[in-house]
Amino acid sequence: MKSFFKYLLASVLGVLVAGLLMFLILLGGIGAMVSSQDQVVKVNSNSILHMELSQPIMDRSNKNPMEGFDFTTFRPAPQLGLNDILSNIKKAKTDPNIDGIYLDLSIISAGIGTIEEIRNALLDFKESGKFIISYSENYTQRSYFLASVADKIYLNPEGIFPFSGLSAEVMFYKDALEKIGVEPQIIRGKNNKFKSAVEPYMYNKMSEENRKQIMTFMGSIWDHILNKISTERNISVKDLNTIADNEVLLNAQVALDNELIDGIKYKDEILKELADLTEKNEISKIETISISKYTKVPDTKRKKLEKDKIAVVYASGVVMPGEGQEGTIGSERISRAIRKARNDSSIKAIVLRVNSGGGSGLASEVIWREVKLAQEVKPVIASIGDVAASGGYYIIAPAQKIIASPNSITGSIGVFMRSFSSKELLNDKLGINIDVVKTNKHSDFGSLARPFSYEEREILQNMVENFYDSFLEKVAEGRNMTKEEVDKIGQGRVWSGANAIENGLIDAFGGLEDAISIAAEEAGLDTYRVVNLPKLEDPFEQLMKDFTGNVKMSILEKELGEEYKYYKILKSIKDQNGIQARMPYEMNLY
Image (tube, rainbow, N blue to C red; front, top):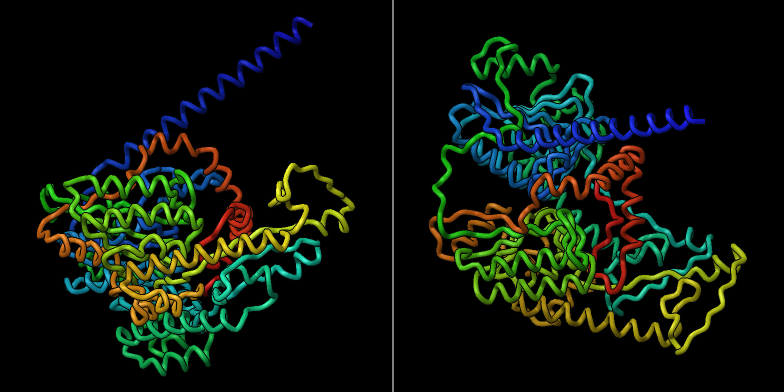
Protein backbone atom coordinates (compact mmCIF):
# COMPACT_ATOMS: atom_id res chain seq x y z
CA MET A 1 0.00 0.00 0.00
CA LYS A 2 2.87 2.37 0.82
CA SER A 3 4.35 1.60 -2.57
CA PHE A 4 1.02 2.43 -4.23
CA PHE A 5 0.79 5.85 -2.57
CA LYS A 6 4.43 6.52 -3.33
CA TYR A 7 3.91 5.91 -7.04
CA LEU A 8 0.63 7.83 -6.99
CA LEU A 9 2.28 10.83 -5.36
CA ALA A 10 5.18 10.66 -7.83
CA SER A 11 2.74 10.53 -10.76
CA VAL A 12 0.74 13.51 -9.48
CA LEU A 13 3.94 15.46 -8.87
CA GLY A 14 5.17 14.56 -12.34
CA VAL A 15 1.96 15.81 -13.93
CA LEU A 16 2.15 19.07 -11.96
CA VAL A 17 5.79 19.64 -12.91
CA ALA A 18 5.09 18.84 -16.56
CA GLY A 19 2.09 21.17 -16.52
CA LEU A 20 4.18 23.95 -14.97
CA LEU A 21 6.93 23.47 -17.56
CA MET A 22 4.38 23.55 -20.40
CA PHE A 23 2.86 26.72 -18.94
CA LEU A 24 6.29 28.38 -18.70
CA ILE A 25 7.12 27.34 -22.27
CA LEU A 26 3.77 28.76 -23.40
CA LEU A 27 4.47 32.03 -21.58
CA GLY A 28 7.89 32.19 -23.17
CA GLY A 29 6.42 31.60 -26.61
CA ILE A 30 3.77 34.24 -26.03
CA GLY A 31 6.39 36.67 -24.76
CA ALA A 32 8.44 36.08 -27.89
CA MET A 33 5.38 36.72 -30.07
CA VAL A 34 4.56 39.91 -28.17
CA SER A 35 8.12 41.22 -28.43
CA SER A 36 8.25 40.34 -32.13
CA GLN A 37 5.42 42.80 -32.75
CA ASP A 38 7.75 45.69 -32.02
CA GLN A 39 10.61 44.47 -34.20
CA VAL A 40 11.45 46.73 -37.12
CA VAL A 41 11.48 45.05 -40.54
CA LYS A 42 13.66 46.21 -43.41
CA VAL A 43 12.54 46.08 -47.04
CA ASN A 44 15.05 45.15 -49.72
CA SER A 45 15.18 47.09 -52.96
CA ASN A 46 12.91 46.06 -55.86
CA SER A 47 10.49 44.30 -53.49
CA ILE A 48 6.87 43.37 -54.07
CA LEU A 49 4.12 43.94 -51.50
CA HIS A 50 2.27 40.61 -51.28
CA MET A 51 -1.41 41.08 -50.39
CA GLU A 52 -3.21 37.90 -49.36
CA LEU A 53 -6.46 38.75 -47.58
CA SER A 54 -8.07 35.44 -46.59
CA GLN A 55 -8.16 36.26 -42.86
CA PRO A 56 -11.14 38.24 -41.50
CA ILE A 57 -10.54 41.98 -41.88
CA MET A 58 -11.56 44.01 -38.84
CA ASP A 59 -11.68 47.81 -38.71
CA ARG A 60 -8.45 47.96 -36.73
CA SER A 61 -5.72 45.51 -35.86
CA ASN A 62 -5.77 43.81 -32.49
CA LYS A 63 -2.56 43.89 -30.44
CA ASN A 64 -3.28 40.39 -29.13
CA PRO A 65 -0.68 38.19 -30.87
CA MET A 66 -2.96 35.19 -30.48
CA GLU A 67 -5.94 36.83 -32.17
CA GLY A 68 -6.82 34.52 -35.04
CA PHE A 69 -4.44 31.84 -33.68
CA ASP A 70 -5.58 28.38 -34.78
CA PHE A 71 -5.59 26.34 -31.58
CA THR A 72 -6.28 23.14 -33.49
CA THR A 73 -3.02 23.42 -35.46
CA PHE A 74 -1.14 25.75 -33.08
CA ARG A 75 -0.23 28.03 -35.94
CA PRO A 76 -0.57 31.81 -35.94
CA ALA A 77 -2.90 33.42 -38.48
CA PRO A 78 -2.34 37.16 -38.09
CA GLN A 79 -5.44 39.27 -38.64
CA LEU A 80 -4.88 42.73 -40.08
CA GLY A 81 -7.13 45.64 -39.45
CA LEU A 82 -8.39 47.82 -42.28
CA ASN A 83 -6.45 50.70 -40.72
CA ASP A 84 -3.13 48.88 -41.23
CA ILE A 85 -4.03 47.69 -44.74
CA LEU A 86 -4.86 51.24 -45.87
CA SER A 87 -1.77 52.63 -44.14
CA ASN A 88 0.46 50.01 -45.76
CA ILE A 89 -0.84 50.69 -49.27
CA LYS A 90 -0.35 54.43 -48.74
CA LYS A 91 3.17 53.82 -47.40
CA ALA A 92 4.04 51.52 -50.31
CA LYS A 93 3.02 54.19 -52.80
CA THR A 94 6.04 56.34 -51.87
CA ASP A 95 8.37 53.58 -50.67
CA PRO A 96 11.31 53.48 -53.15
CA ASN A 97 11.93 49.84 -52.25
CA ILE A 98 8.44 48.70 -53.30
CA ASP A 99 8.11 48.19 -57.06
CA GLY A 100 4.52 47.00 -57.06
CA ILE A 101 1.75 44.97 -55.46
CA TYR A 102 0.90 41.31 -56.00
CA LEU A 103 -2.76 40.58 -55.23
CA ASP A 104 -2.91 36.90 -54.29
CA LEU A 105 -6.69 36.61 -54.10
CA SER A 106 -9.23 33.88 -53.48
CA ILE A 107 -11.76 34.34 -50.69
CA ILE A 108 -11.85 37.75 -48.99
CA SER A 109 -13.36 37.69 -45.51
CA ALA A 110 -14.75 41.22 -45.54
CA GLY A 111 -17.88 43.12 -46.48
CA ILE A 112 -18.22 44.89 -49.79
CA GLY A 113 -17.88 48.29 -48.11
CA THR A 114 -14.53 47.32 -46.61
CA ILE A 115 -13.36 45.86 -49.92
CA GLU A 116 -14.20 49.13 -51.67
CA GLU A 117 -12.07 51.10 -49.20
CA ILE A 118 -9.11 48.82 -50.00
CA ARG A 119 -9.94 49.08 -53.71
CA ASN A 120 -9.91 52.89 -53.56
CA ALA A 121 -6.55 52.81 -51.80
CA LEU A 122 -5.18 50.61 -54.60
CA LEU A 123 -6.49 53.05 -57.20
CA ASP A 124 -4.60 55.80 -55.40
CA PHE A 125 -1.50 53.57 -55.32
CA LYS A 126 -1.65 53.19 -59.13
CA GLU A 127 -1.08 56.93 -59.50
CA SER A 128 2.53 56.24 -58.51
CA GLY A 129 3.05 54.34 -61.76
CA LYS A 130 3.90 51.15 -59.89
CA PHE A 131 2.32 47.88 -61.04
CA ILE A 132 -0.51 45.82 -59.57
CA ILE A 133 -0.76 42.18 -60.67
CA SER A 134 -3.62 39.93 -59.55
CA TYR A 135 -3.70 36.14 -59.65
CA SER A 136 -6.02 33.49 -58.26
CA GLU A 137 -6.83 29.84 -58.75
CA ASN A 138 -10.50 30.76 -58.25
CA TYR A 139 -12.01 34.23 -57.99
CA THR A 140 -15.17 35.06 -56.09
CA GLN A 141 -17.29 38.06 -57.01
CA ARG A 142 -15.88 39.96 -54.03
CA SER A 143 -12.26 39.12 -54.78
CA TYR A 144 -12.76 39.96 -58.45
CA PHE A 145 -14.26 43.34 -57.50
CA LEU A 146 -10.97 44.09 -55.73
CA ALA A 147 -8.85 42.52 -58.48
CA SER A 148 -10.52 44.64 -61.17
CA VAL A 149 -8.19 47.55 -60.31
CA ALA A 150 -5.10 45.53 -61.27
CA ASP A 151 -3.05 46.24 -64.38
CA LYS A 152 -3.25 42.55 -65.21
CA ILE A 153 -5.70 39.93 -63.93
CA TYR A 154 -4.76 36.26 -64.29
CA LEU A 155 -6.58 33.02 -63.57
CA ASN A 156 -5.38 29.42 -63.28
CA PRO A 157 -6.18 27.34 -66.42
CA GLU A 158 -8.57 25.14 -64.44
CA GLY A 159 -9.89 27.98 -62.33
CA ILE A 160 -13.53 29.02 -62.12
CA PHE A 161 -15.11 32.38 -61.67
CA PRO A 162 -18.72 32.77 -60.46
CA PHE A 163 -20.25 35.92 -61.90
CA SER A 164 -24.00 35.79 -61.43
CA GLY A 165 -25.06 38.86 -59.46
CA LEU A 166 -26.07 39.18 -55.81
CA SER A 167 -28.64 37.18 -53.89
CA ALA A 168 -29.95 37.29 -50.33
CA GLU A 169 -31.04 34.30 -48.28
CA VAL A 170 -33.22 34.56 -45.18
CA MET A 171 -33.90 31.56 -42.94
CA PHE A 172 -37.40 31.24 -41.42
CA TYR A 173 -38.15 29.37 -38.19
CA LYS A 174 -41.93 29.80 -37.80
CA ASP A 175 -42.96 26.29 -38.89
CA ALA A 176 -40.15 24.65 -36.91
CA LEU A 177 -41.18 26.53 -33.76
CA GLU A 178 -44.81 25.50 -34.27
CA LYS A 179 -43.80 21.85 -34.56
CA ILE A 180 -42.01 21.89 -31.23
CA GLY A 181 -44.68 23.99 -29.53
CA VAL A 182 -42.84 27.29 -29.07
CA GLU A 183 -44.76 30.52 -29.66
CA PRO A 184 -42.78 33.67 -30.55
CA GLN A 185 -43.86 36.80 -28.67
CA ILE A 186 -43.18 39.61 -31.15
CA ILE A 187 -43.69 43.30 -30.43
CA ARG A 188 -42.71 45.85 -33.08
CA GLY A 189 -43.83 49.31 -34.07
CA LYS A 190 -47.26 49.33 -35.72
CA ASN A 191 -45.89 50.90 -38.89
CA ASN A 192 -42.45 49.24 -38.75
CA LYS A 193 -43.40 46.95 -41.63
CA PHE A 194 -39.81 46.91 -42.96
CA LYS A 195 -38.31 45.84 -39.60
CA SER A 196 -37.66 42.36 -40.89
CA ALA A 197 -35.47 41.08 -38.04
CA VAL A 198 -38.59 39.52 -36.51
CA GLU A 199 -40.03 38.05 -39.72
CA PRO A 200 -38.31 34.64 -39.43
CA TYR A 201 -40.41 34.00 -36.33
CA MET A 202 -43.68 35.37 -37.77
CA TYR A 203 -43.74 34.07 -41.36
CA ASN A 204 -42.35 31.26 -43.47
CA LYS A 205 -41.32 33.55 -46.34
CA MET A 206 -40.39 37.19 -46.90
CA SER A 207 -43.06 39.85 -46.64
CA GLU A 208 -43.52 41.99 -49.72
CA GLU A 209 -42.04 44.95 -47.83
CA ASN A 210 -38.92 42.97 -46.94
CA ARG A 211 -38.51 41.67 -50.47
CA LYS A 212 -38.85 45.22 -51.79
CA GLN A 213 -36.26 46.71 -49.43
CA ILE A 214 -33.73 43.93 -50.08
CA MET A 215 -34.11 44.29 -53.82
CA THR A 216 -33.69 48.06 -53.55
CA PHE A 217 -30.44 48.14 -51.57
CA MET A 218 -29.03 44.96 -53.13
CA GLY A 219 -29.79 46.25 -56.63
CA SER A 220 -28.02 49.55 -55.94
CA ILE A 221 -24.95 47.71 -54.59
CA TRP A 222 -24.79 45.46 -57.68
CA ASP A 223 -25.17 48.45 -59.99
CA HIS A 224 -22.34 50.21 -58.19
CA ILE A 225 -20.06 47.17 -58.43
CA LEU A 226 -20.77 46.80 -62.14
CA ASN A 227 -20.09 50.48 -62.80
CA LYS A 228 -16.74 50.28 -61.01
CA ILE A 229 -15.75 47.12 -62.89
CA SER A 230 -16.93 48.67 -66.15
CA THR A 231 -14.66 51.68 -65.64
CA GLU A 232 -11.53 49.62 -65.01
CA ARG A 233 -12.16 46.82 -67.53
CA ASN A 234 -13.77 48.93 -70.27
CA ILE A 235 -16.76 46.58 -70.49
CA SER A 236 -20.24 48.08 -70.57
CA VAL A 237 -22.61 47.49 -67.64
CA LYS A 238 -25.08 46.00 -70.13
CA ASP A 239 -22.51 43.45 -71.28
CA LEU A 240 -21.55 42.63 -67.69
CA ASN A 241 -25.20 41.92 -66.85
CA THR A 242 -25.50 39.78 -69.98
CA ILE A 243 -22.51 37.73 -68.82
CA ALA A 244 -24.07 37.33 -65.37
CA ASP A 245 -27.40 36.23 -66.87
CA ASN A 246 -25.97 33.78 -69.41
CA GLU A 247 -22.76 32.37 -68.01
CA VAL A 248 -23.29 32.11 -64.20
CA LEU A 249 -20.07 30.11 -63.57
CA LEU A 250 -17.22 31.02 -65.87
CA ASN A 251 -14.22 28.87 -66.63
CA ALA A 252 -10.89 30.51 -67.39
CA GLN A 253 -11.36 30.56 -71.15
CA VAL A 254 -14.86 32.07 -70.99
CA ALA A 255 -13.59 34.72 -68.56
CA LEU A 256 -10.79 35.54 -70.97
CA ASP A 257 -13.11 35.59 -73.99
CA ASN A 258 -15.30 38.12 -72.16
CA GLU A 259 -12.24 40.22 -71.27
CA LEU A 260 -12.85 39.88 -67.54
CA ILE A 261 -9.27 38.67 -67.18
CA ASP A 262 -6.06 39.33 -69.11
CA GLY A 263 -4.56 35.89 -69.24
CA ILE A 264 -4.62 32.23 -68.20
CA LYS A 265 -1.47 31.26 -66.34
CA TYR A 266 0.01 28.91 -63.81
CA LYS A 267 1.64 30.20 -60.63
CA ASP A 268 5.19 29.71 -61.96
CA GLU A 269 4.33 31.88 -64.97
CA ILE A 270 3.05 34.61 -62.64
CA LEU A 271 6.25 34.45 -60.63
CA LYS A 272 8.28 34.72 -63.82
CA GLU A 273 6.35 37.87 -64.79
CA LEU A 274 6.93 39.34 -61.32
CA ALA A 275 10.62 38.57 -61.61
CA ASP A 276 10.76 40.40 -64.95
CA LEU A 277 8.83 43.40 -63.59
CA THR A 278 11.32 43.78 -60.72
CA GLU A 279 14.32 43.14 -62.98
CA LYS A 280 15.28 40.04 -61.01
CA ASN A 281 15.15 37.76 -64.07
CA GLU A 282 15.08 34.63 -61.90
CA ILE A 283 12.11 33.50 -59.77
CA SER A 284 14.42 32.56 -56.89
CA LYS A 285 15.60 36.16 -56.62
CA ILE A 286 12.14 37.72 -56.20
CA GLU A 287 11.89 39.85 -53.05
CA THR A 288 8.43 39.91 -51.48
CA ILE A 289 7.07 41.18 -48.19
CA SER A 290 3.67 40.26 -46.77
CA ILE A 291 1.12 42.93 -45.94
CA SER A 292 1.25 41.91 -42.25
CA LYS A 293 5.06 42.08 -42.06
CA TYR A 294 5.08 45.38 -43.95
CA THR A 295 3.21 46.93 -41.01
CA LYS A 296 6.50 46.75 -39.07
CA VAL A 297 8.37 48.74 -41.70
CA PRO A 298 8.89 52.38 -40.55
CA ASP A 299 7.17 55.01 -42.66
CA THR A 300 9.95 57.35 -43.80
CA LYS A 301 7.37 59.90 -44.92
CA ARG A 302 5.65 60.00 -41.53
CA LYS A 303 5.20 63.48 -40.17
CA LYS A 304 6.64 64.62 -36.89
CA LEU A 305 4.61 64.07 -33.74
CA GLU A 306 1.99 66.82 -33.81
CA LYS A 307 0.37 68.30 -30.73
CA ASP A 308 -3.13 68.53 -32.20
CA LYS A 309 -4.93 65.22 -32.55
CA ILE A 310 -7.93 63.64 -34.22
CA ALA A 311 -9.39 60.72 -32.29
CA VAL A 312 -10.79 57.76 -34.21
CA VAL A 313 -13.20 55.88 -31.97
CA TYR A 314 -13.75 52.34 -33.27
CA ALA A 315 -17.19 50.82 -32.58
CA SER A 316 -17.60 47.39 -34.15
CA GLY A 317 -19.99 44.53 -33.41
CA VAL A 318 -23.24 44.16 -31.53
CA VAL A 319 -24.36 47.12 -29.41
CA MET A 320 -24.70 45.82 -25.88
CA PRO A 321 -24.97 47.14 -22.32
CA GLY A 322 -21.91 47.17 -20.08
CA GLU A 323 -18.20 47.06 -20.73
CA GLY A 324 -18.02 44.75 -23.73
CA GLN A 325 -14.69 44.09 -25.44
CA GLU A 326 -12.92 44.52 -28.76
CA GLY A 327 -15.36 43.22 -31.39
CA THR A 328 -18.46 44.38 -29.50
CA ILE A 329 -19.87 47.82 -28.79
CA GLY A 330 -20.15 47.86 -25.02
CA SER A 331 -22.02 51.02 -24.02
CA GLU A 332 -19.68 51.73 -21.07
CA ARG A 333 -16.44 51.17 -23.00
CA ILE A 334 -17.40 53.18 -26.09
CA SER A 335 -19.08 55.97 -24.08
CA ARG A 336 -15.96 56.31 -21.95
CA ALA A 337 -13.78 56.56 -25.08
CA ILE A 338 -15.98 59.30 -26.57
CA ARG A 339 -16.07 61.15 -23.25
CA LYS A 340 -12.28 60.96 -23.02
CA ALA A 341 -11.94 62.42 -26.52
CA ARG A 342 -14.44 65.17 -25.69
CA ASN A 343 -12.62 66.23 -22.52
CA ASP A 344 -9.10 66.08 -24.02
CA SER A 345 -8.24 69.61 -25.17
CA SER A 346 -5.51 68.30 -27.51
CA ILE A 347 -8.12 66.31 -29.46
CA LYS A 348 -9.69 68.77 -31.88
CA ALA A 349 -12.11 66.44 -33.68
CA ILE A 350 -13.57 62.95 -33.39
CA VAL A 351 -14.18 60.34 -36.08
CA LEU A 352 -16.64 57.68 -34.95
CA ARG A 353 -16.00 54.59 -37.07
CA VAL A 354 -19.00 52.25 -36.87
CA ASN A 355 -19.44 48.73 -38.16
CA SER A 356 -22.62 47.45 -36.56
CA GLY A 357 -26.11 46.25 -37.34
CA GLY A 358 -27.23 47.46 -33.90
CA GLY A 359 -28.36 45.63 -30.81
CA SER A 360 -29.67 46.87 -27.47
CA GLY A 361 -31.83 49.97 -27.77
CA LEU A 362 -30.89 51.18 -24.28
CA ALA A 363 -27.16 50.72 -24.93
CA SER A 364 -27.55 52.68 -28.18
CA GLU A 365 -29.21 55.49 -26.25
CA VAL A 366 -26.34 55.62 -23.75
CA ILE A 367 -23.77 55.99 -26.54
CA TRP A 368 -25.96 58.47 -28.46
CA ARG A 369 -25.87 60.81 -25.45
CA GLU A 370 -22.07 60.90 -25.40
CA VAL A 371 -21.89 61.50 -29.16
CA LYS A 372 -24.34 64.39 -28.83
CA LEU A 373 -22.35 65.96 -25.97
CA ALA A 374 -19.13 65.62 -27.97
CA GLN A 375 -20.67 67.18 -31.08
CA GLU A 376 -21.62 70.24 -29.02
CA VAL A 377 -17.96 71.04 -28.29
CA LYS A 378 -15.97 69.74 -31.29
CA PRO A 379 -16.61 68.25 -34.75
CA VAL A 380 -17.77 64.63 -34.79
CA ILE A 381 -17.63 62.90 -38.16
CA ALA A 382 -19.18 59.43 -38.51
CA SER A 383 -17.59 56.88 -40.81
CA ILE A 384 -19.73 53.88 -41.78
CA GLY A 385 -17.86 50.68 -42.59
CA ASP A 386 -19.77 47.73 -44.05
CA VAL A 387 -22.84 48.53 -41.97
CA ALA A 388 -24.20 51.09 -39.52
CA ALA A 389 -27.88 50.28 -39.27
CA SER A 390 -30.59 50.37 -36.61
CA GLY A 391 -28.72 50.83 -33.30
CA GLY A 392 -25.56 51.32 -35.35
CA TYR A 393 -27.19 54.32 -37.02
CA TYR A 394 -28.80 55.49 -33.77
CA ILE A 395 -25.39 56.21 -32.22
CA ILE A 396 -24.13 58.28 -35.19
CA ALA A 397 -27.30 60.31 -35.67
CA PRO A 398 -25.92 63.43 -33.84
CA ALA A 399 -22.72 63.53 -35.90
CA GLN A 400 -21.96 66.70 -37.85
CA LYS A 401 -21.43 64.65 -41.03
CA ILE A 402 -21.93 61.00 -41.89
CA ILE A 403 -19.66 59.39 -44.51
CA ALA A 404 -20.26 55.97 -46.09
CA SER A 405 -19.42 53.81 -49.06
CA PRO A 406 -22.09 53.41 -51.76
CA ASN A 407 -21.94 49.72 -50.78
CA SER A 408 -22.46 50.31 -47.05
CA ILE A 409 -25.68 49.17 -45.38
CA THR A 410 -27.50 51.70 -43.21
CA GLY A 411 -30.92 52.86 -42.07
CA SER A 412 -33.14 50.20 -40.46
CA ILE A 413 -34.64 52.89 -38.23
CA GLY A 414 -37.03 50.82 -36.14
CA VAL A 415 -37.24 48.74 -32.97
CA PHE A 416 -38.80 45.55 -31.64
CA MET A 417 -39.03 43.22 -28.67
CA ARG A 418 -38.87 39.45 -28.90
CA SER A 419 -39.60 36.65 -26.46
CA PHE A 420 -40.84 33.07 -26.60
CA SER A 421 -43.55 31.09 -24.85
CA SER A 422 -42.85 27.37 -24.37
CA LYS A 423 -46.27 26.56 -22.88
CA GLU A 424 -47.30 24.11 -25.61
CA LEU A 425 -43.84 22.53 -25.72
CA LEU A 426 -43.84 21.95 -21.97
CA ASN A 427 -47.50 20.94 -21.54
CA ASP A 428 -48.42 19.05 -24.72
CA LYS A 429 -45.10 17.87 -26.15
CA LEU A 430 -43.16 17.03 -22.99
CA GLY A 431 -45.98 16.53 -20.49
CA ILE A 432 -44.47 19.05 -18.08
CA ASN A 433 -46.84 21.26 -16.07
CA ILE A 434 -45.74 24.34 -14.18
CA ASP A 435 -47.70 25.85 -11.31
CA VAL A 436 -46.95 29.29 -9.90
CA VAL A 437 -47.51 31.27 -6.73
CA LYS A 438 -47.32 35.07 -7.06
CA THR A 439 -47.92 38.12 -4.94
CA ASN A 440 -49.17 40.35 -7.75
CA LYS A 441 -50.99 40.09 -11.04
CA HIS A 442 -47.90 40.20 -13.25
CA SER A 443 -45.28 38.72 -10.92
CA ASP A 444 -44.55 35.91 -13.40
CA PHE A 445 -44.21 38.30 -16.35
CA GLY A 446 -41.61 37.02 -18.79
CA SER A 447 -41.96 33.38 -17.79
CA LEU A 448 -41.42 30.97 -20.69
CA ALA A 449 -44.26 28.87 -19.27
CA ARG A 450 -46.97 31.24 -20.53
CA PRO A 451 -47.57 33.81 -23.29
CA PHE A 452 -48.04 37.52 -22.64
CA SER A 453 -51.49 38.57 -21.54
CA TYR A 454 -53.40 41.15 -23.60
CA GLU A 455 -52.67 43.81 -21.01
CA GLU A 456 -48.96 42.97 -20.92
CA ARG A 457 -48.74 42.99 -24.71
CA GLU A 458 -50.31 46.46 -24.81
CA ILE A 459 -47.82 47.76 -22.26
CA LEU A 460 -44.92 46.41 -24.30
CA GLN A 461 -46.42 47.75 -27.52
CA ASN A 462 -46.56 51.24 -26.02
CA MET A 463 -42.94 50.95 -24.88
CA VAL A 464 -41.83 49.98 -28.38
CA GLU A 465 -43.89 52.76 -29.97
CA ASN A 466 -42.43 55.33 -27.59
CA PHE A 467 -38.88 54.17 -28.25
CA TYR A 468 -39.42 54.32 -32.00
CA ASP A 469 -40.79 57.84 -31.63
CA SER A 470 -37.67 58.79 -29.67
CA PHE A 471 -35.52 57.19 -32.40
CA LEU A 472 -37.28 59.35 -35.02
CA GLU A 473 -36.74 62.50 -32.95
CA LYS A 474 -33.02 61.85 -32.58
CA VAL A 475 -32.48 61.18 -36.28
CA ALA A 476 -34.64 64.18 -37.22
CA GLU A 477 -32.60 66.46 -34.93
CA GLY A 478 -29.26 65.12 -36.16
CA ARG A 479 -30.15 65.18 -39.87
CA ASN A 480 -32.09 68.47 -39.79
CA MET A 481 -35.28 66.75 -40.94
CA THR A 482 -38.82 66.48 -39.60
CA LYS A 483 -40.02 63.39 -37.78
CA GLU A 484 -42.46 62.77 -40.61
CA GLU A 485 -39.63 62.85 -43.17
CA VAL A 486 -37.58 60.39 -41.12
CA ASP A 487 -40.57 58.10 -40.66
CA LYS A 488 -41.07 57.88 -44.43
CA ILE A 489 -37.56 56.45 -44.84
CA GLY A 490 -37.69 54.68 -41.46
CA GLN A 491 -40.21 52.00 -40.47
CA GLY A 492 -37.28 49.60 -40.17
CA ARG A 493 -36.26 49.95 -43.83
CA VAL A 494 -32.68 49.06 -44.77
CA TRP A 495 -30.84 51.20 -47.34
CA SER A 496 -27.53 51.05 -49.17
CA GLY A 497 -25.12 53.97 -49.00
CA ALA A 498 -26.13 54.87 -52.56
CA ASN A 499 -29.78 55.04 -51.45
CA ALA A 500 -28.89 56.89 -48.25
CA ILE A 501 -27.20 59.83 -49.95
CA GLU A 502 -30.44 60.40 -51.87
CA ASN A 503 -32.76 60.19 -48.86
CA GLY A 504 -30.53 62.26 -46.55
CA LEU A 505 -29.25 59.62 -44.14
CA ILE A 506 -25.62 60.27 -45.13
CA ASP A 507 -23.75 63.33 -46.40
CA ALA A 508 -21.03 62.01 -48.70
CA PHE A 509 -19.29 58.95 -50.07
CA GLY A 510 -15.93 58.00 -48.65
CA GLY A 511 -13.99 55.73 -46.35
CA LEU A 512 -12.19 56.13 -43.05
CA GLU A 513 -9.35 58.21 -44.50
CA ASP A 514 -11.88 60.58 -46.09
CA ALA A 515 -13.69 60.94 -42.77
CA ILE A 516 -10.42 61.85 -41.03
CA SER A 517 -9.67 64.47 -43.70
CA ILE A 518 -13.13 65.98 -43.31
CA ALA A 519 -12.70 66.05 -39.51
CA ALA A 520 -9.39 67.91 -39.93
CA GLU A 521 -11.03 70.41 -42.27
CA GLU A 522 -13.94 70.99 -39.89
CA ALA A 523 -11.51 71.53 -37.02
CA GLY A 524 -9.31 73.85 -39.10
CA LEU A 525 -6.25 71.62 -38.82
CA ASP A 526 -3.43 71.62 -41.35
CA THR A 527 -1.22 69.28 -39.34
CA TYR A 528 -2.35 66.68 -36.83
CA ARG A 529 -1.85 63.12 -35.69
CA VAL A 530 -4.42 60.37 -35.30
CA VAL A 531 -5.02 58.53 -32.03
CA ASN A 532 -7.15 55.40 -31.82
CA LEU A 533 -9.73 54.78 -29.10
CA PRO A 534 -10.74 52.82 -27.06
CA LYS A 535 -7.16 52.07 -26.13
CA LEU A 536 -6.36 48.42 -26.73
CA GLU A 537 -5.34 46.38 -23.73
CA ASP A 538 -1.77 45.27 -23.26
CA PRO A 539 -1.48 42.19 -25.49
CA PHE A 540 -0.17 39.98 -22.69
CA GLU A 541 -2.94 40.94 -20.27
CA GLN A 542 -5.56 40.60 -22.98
CA LEU A 543 -4.27 37.20 -23.94
CA MET A 544 -4.29 35.83 -20.40
CA LYS A 545 -7.80 37.17 -19.82
CA ASP A 546 -9.45 35.57 -22.83
CA PHE A 547 -7.12 32.63 -23.53
CA THR A 548 -9.66 29.98 -22.48
CA GLY A 549 -12.48 31.59 -24.45
CA ASN A 550 -10.33 31.87 -27.58
CA VAL A 551 -9.40 28.21 -27.38
CA LYS A 552 -13.03 27.15 -27.00
CA MET A 553 -14.34 29.37 -29.80
CA SER A 554 -11.48 28.50 -32.16
CA ILE A 555 -12.09 24.77 -31.76
CA LEU A 556 -15.86 25.23 -32.05
CA GLU A 557 -15.50 27.28 -35.23
CA LYS A 558 -13.10 24.71 -36.66
CA GLU A 559 -15.47 21.83 -35.93
CA LEU A 560 -18.68 23.52 -37.13
CA GLY A 561 -17.17 25.10 -40.24
CA GLU A 562 -19.85 26.87 -42.30
CA GLU A 563 -22.46 25.93 -39.69
CA TYR A 564 -20.68 28.09 -37.10
CA LYS A 565 -22.77 31.06 -38.29
CA TYR A 566 -25.93 29.30 -37.09
CA TYR A 567 -24.41 28.86 -33.65
CA LYS A 568 -23.72 32.63 -33.59
CA ILE A 569 -27.34 33.32 -34.61
CA LEU A 570 -28.71 31.16 -31.79
CA LYS A 571 -26.34 32.77 -29.30
CA SER A 572 -27.38 36.27 -30.39
CA ILE A 573 -31.08 35.36 -29.98
CA LYS A 574 -30.37 34.17 -26.44
CA ASP A 575 -28.69 37.49 -25.59
CA GLN A 576 -31.45 39.74 -26.95
CA ASN A 577 -33.17 41.25 -23.91
CA GLY A 578 -35.29 44.40 -23.81
CA ILE A 579 -36.02 46.69 -26.76
CA GLN A 580 -33.84 45.85 -29.74
CA ALA A 581 -32.61 48.26 -32.41
CA ARG A 582 -30.96 45.85 -34.79
CA MET A 583 -31.15 44.78 -38.41
CA PRO A 584 -31.68 41.16 -39.53
CA TYR A 585 -28.38 39.35 -38.92
CA GLU A 586 -29.95 36.18 -40.30
CA MET A 587 -29.79 37.60 -43.84
CA ASN A 588 -26.82 36.50 -45.94
CA LEU A 589 -25.80 38.50 -49.02
CA TYR A 590 -23.84 36.61 -51.70
